[in-house]
Image (tube, rainbow, N blue to C red; front, side, top):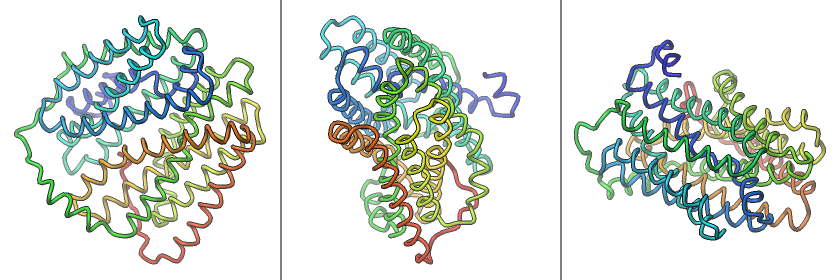
Length: 402
């Protein structure tokens, strides 16, 4: 992996960051498989799974906020080593405790660590990058996340299909590898502490343009739709694939990550002529088509085929919300708004899981997928009409998915 990164011209510092990012994504093996893992490992029903996944999102959110506060006060290496060490310990305790409640509590603390480390990689990349390669550097960081996700779905889906204990063991082993890599790899260090002016930051937030606020609300709605792939999709697969849910869900993750890698740049080139609000509206339509189709098709090949549509929604959503923020706000405001994106995602995940659990219990999977499809298409279509009447919609020339 590191030889490949060297061949494509990445500087040594960025190569190490990309390699570490890939490892830490793979270490969070329980996150993408949470619904199936908790259902099988702890014998939980769908409502209990929904509660635990909501708690996981809350702990991840708290970890993200804590990481954002700590990254300015402690060295990157200390944060990486301590976080990955704690992750290994929490997973070990989760495996040995006989009480399900205590074991799940350890998994929640593991998710706290996973959230805590996320801001570190963005700051590391900012230190290594310069103005000429900033977009490319964050692009490689995102590429590492998707490569790690693809490998995780490939390996994790197989392991979960064998036994849920193997998935936990895999996460534990990769966490130990994260500790070792954090110890031995060279990492950039800050030249000095950068004081935060919180009062100025809050003042800058007051001046956020209305179009950014509208786009933020749209992005939250998109995130609520997107989160169903982490809750309703694996539970539905468990019902329709006759015991092959883990392997099929792993294949879904591989297809999704591969499509993100292959289609991001061509899709951006194709859609950059449109405004950000128009592209966010198109994202909702793609989500509606992709998820709504699952109400009618249960064949594995078609399940994988419709991953294309909601992946297009994913790419458009994250690309154009970040591009709009970078174009329409000051640098000081950008830092605050970008830090809100993981919070929006975590909050949307909690709303989505609660909504999904209610719909599954009340109307079943088929009607739930139909409702998500209808909501996505109607919401996107309505927003397209609004965007067409909004003359201030920005043009995006070179958005950054970071």
